[in-house]
Length: 345
Ligand code: DOR
Ligand code: ZN
Image (tube, rainbow, N blue to C red; front, side, top):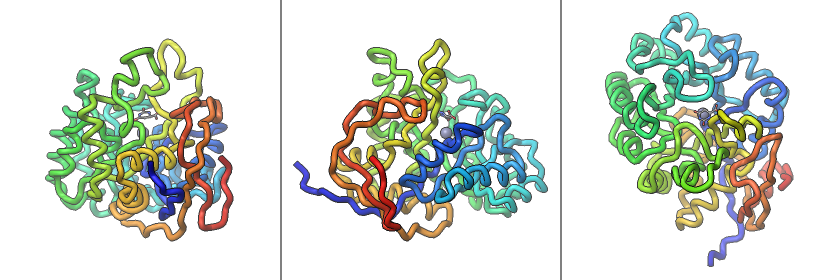
């Protein structure tokens, strides 16, 4: 029995979210603003965020819908980017380029087949101080082996360009954790809430659970354990990126369902539960409010957020999407931000 009734944390950031576009954007962005000060917004829209003006327009659209949310912008990094385009992306405020291997996830048909295809751009990325975020899966490989098979080209790239920062996104295997641990200080990894909790058995081991289907797919219990140990370790190379990826209910519950877990409605509350159950609550703040900001060279947030022990039921549907842990009880509720903003359940 744990007697803690309040958790006060430095306000967290989420270094990997999908806020989508058009009519969907407002609800998803305000959901993120409920808790997070800053979010790194992924660029896999249709059409994608590719150039400076795309970044400016998208950030403006987010600002209009959720003025309190600080959107850190990422663009889709392609081998055909010119130095002038990269400079204009930086001027427009982008902090990172996201690399998508071809066909491995939502809207990645135009992706690369090998990370070495972007090596010619590295001197420019270095000069501009742009972070390279990698969806780390090798196209064409058996789905459970895709992440592991990406690690060789990732390691080579990180080692060859020590002055460029690389983030291996949403790691899902023990091999990826080990790889990032052994690379230099210019490599880090994000870990999602759902990869800390589920394995492939939760997705397909019994009844099919389409709302837990994501890329990279959740793996073995030993992989989940390695991710948990990395998150609880206090190693600043591992920090939070939710990969909250909403798809409308009908796009998940169908013959060809989209990949993505919509965890934003429970992100911080769910993390608190995971860290508390492991007896590692003291490591939560580093993981979600400090290490990511430090890796990206950003100031730490000044405000705090307070969680109280007050169970609540996760809704079955949020903005037309079945959220992570829908219908389940969560132990922690986000009560207030130090800005005084009262929060709804
Ligand atoms: O499951 C996923 N969904 N993984 C990704 O990498 C992309 C995301 C999405 O955009 O739906
Ligand atoms: Zn993602």
